[in-house]
Image (spheres, rainbow, N blue to C red):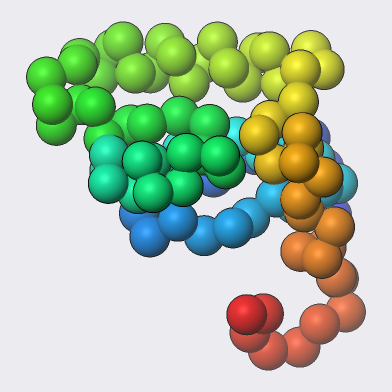
Length: 96
């Protein structure tokens, strides 16, 4: 964000609860198990590629969703007001 990022495409395999409120964040689950377990907080299920959906189709879904977020549509994290605590530019060490 400090470098000018205005939109985040965040991939996760384990289901990190990342909202990062200063910029819209699209959460992309890399596998269907994580997507199903965290359905209320994952925007895209990229694990569908392993189930036969083409990379092009999932890529198009990601692209269209990024355009929607950039146009003001809230991500699932934003809709739930998640992400305030991730922004701390002075923290030293890991954040849990």
